[in-house]
Image (tube, rainbow over all chains, first blue to last red; front, side, top):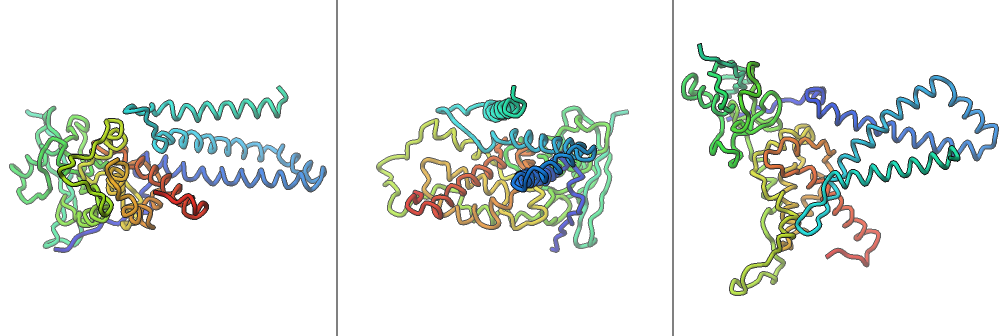
Length: 127
Length: 250
């Protein structure tokens, strides 16, 4: 008896919403990596002196740069939220026979995120 | 006139066609019918040539898995009323070679399951004599792996996994979850043997954490979690073996 193996099309990920969301999550990694490189460039420019750093800061104030930052922010937020929501699958903690609620595990990460953000805001804005 | 609905069913008969086709059947609509009831009706009353697997009709045997409108489901647990009045498209589980109609070849899964050694393994010479009684396990120890022991080998998780569909060498969700089930069992000592399969090139590292294996699981086994947890423990193994040679596992 001969069997038939159905081919998988290149657009398989468009066929169901969970697959589309997964692919977006994968795509967000590019923006996360890209922004990490940008931060390294920022530090490098600092080592090059005030003029080099000032030129970069001026370029960052262009509308195209601000728009790119907003787009990156949206992708990084999506990346962070989707991964934080998945953490309870990896961090499975039991107290005796009872599993620590998944919301509590993810909530701890969100709380940490808020605390770090507030600290950074205080540090940068001098609040 | 009694209400009806249409089922569009994947047909493949290798003796008469080289590529599959779809055949539409009109079946009576009943509030309490599941997709399997409708397919049984077709088999008994309309077209006896239709081939498919089923057995218990109560979500235990794991035989009747099918793609229902593109989503892997046990056909005994998918109610017609959730789709009525629209047409339902029924296909064999994706990722597997089709033998006939809705019947697919499961040899690959069975081979992988066997490689995983899903049973309690004791180290050489450490098996207790029968007269010493059973290995005692506390409810807390049971709780750690019980979820993974609920697998009924229905293979819905494989059909939901795009990694398996694209590369069938991947060991896959259910086999790894069952490996984890025994790795986490306090009575078991076979983790090292299973690790050769779990942490192999075709094992956990192929998984990109799509997570749909867990979403479609009819028994809430959560194989995606099992795989990610195996990644964590395998990473710890690597650190112990390579970075801290004196901190050998075991």
